[in-house]
Length: 536
Image 1 (cartoon, rainbow, N blue to C red):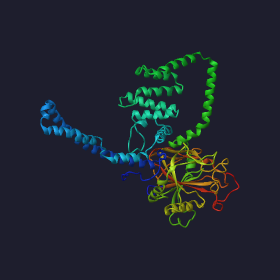
Image 2: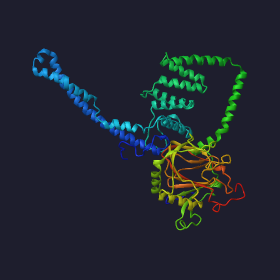
Image 3: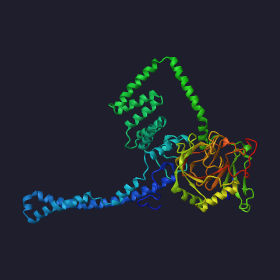
Image 4: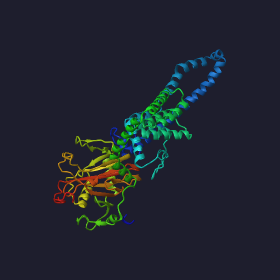
């Protein structure tokens, strides 16, 4: 199906390049790159400060050496020393004037640049929300891509250019963040990793007592009472007077004694309750499991018979005058729903222009709240986005025209071009682009009907992860810079195609930029006529 190979910073000064207030840095790699420049600028200022302080210390050292020799002589024969009037005068002068000057030199900030730069830049620093968001992203990647803590800690990820390691202190911090979220599963994993690295001899400020305190409680919360007791005993070996550990040990012993006294009927009842809980969880898990498998490149595969029906072709937009002499390359990605990919459809220059236009406007991506109908942020969509109009740039206008020519749909009623940049572990969990029957007012303010189709540009390659997956049918579409994919969200009858439910997988390694155009029903009456058959 695929085509052959022939087809196929300057320092910031005192201010960031974009004067935006702090806004969820972790949700966009594009904005996080500014922080790299900020930190570089601070390092330069800090090195200047160190040089100035070293120069100051050198002056103070000379003073100290001179005065050391002088006082050494003077203290051996104070009266004889002061018997010389010049020495007496100079002592008065030193204590009255020169020591004051030395005091001023010691207290003087030799590099106002660093202090002022630090003060100004601090307002743009990430906050607790960013640190927590980045930590939760690591946990999300761990789950989605079946990564064990040791793999993440050692930085053994596919496609990495700059290998990085997590220290025991870093692992401890991840465990603490999971703990504050009452996520005891990940608390246990990362506290155990921190403990393991300390046991292997890593020198760290992380304290085993604190780690074991968190770890034993996390294990207890997950129901493993005996392991919790073992960990608490280890904690008490390190700190026999630990108040909470001593209290917990007595409590654990009490609970175990109570369990032994519990009768079988209550045990059976608890077992039944557990089974019901498991059943309820299973009602939700299948899509999540399929979604994560597809993100890993696993899951459903297309049969050879269906695979044979997929083709690649030169496409002229149904004899569109602009493409008759220069057709574009098109591949079939999936049959039902039909997903096609256009190759070499947006140039590197156009991509850079779109990114430069979007970057100053990037803000946390929102979703429609089905209850209120309003836009809101959500934990299941981690990215930043911006909207670009064709009126503001000939490049955007040209892209809009290209979409209209190749889809045959009217873009005058479409939404503006949305540009998205995904952050650490950036994702958009399974969702529909179109409004369902229970969301009649989702796009009411636009007055252009439902979203009939989706056009999605890939504006970067992604080293690992970041696929667009369709859990209902088992399709995985991988990012390829300069290409675009297109599919219809609605049947010709106007009914929603529920097989188009899709997701943007978390970015494991790399930086993902995309832009998309949502085309609406209004204006398509003669371009894509309705049919009488609901599912045609």
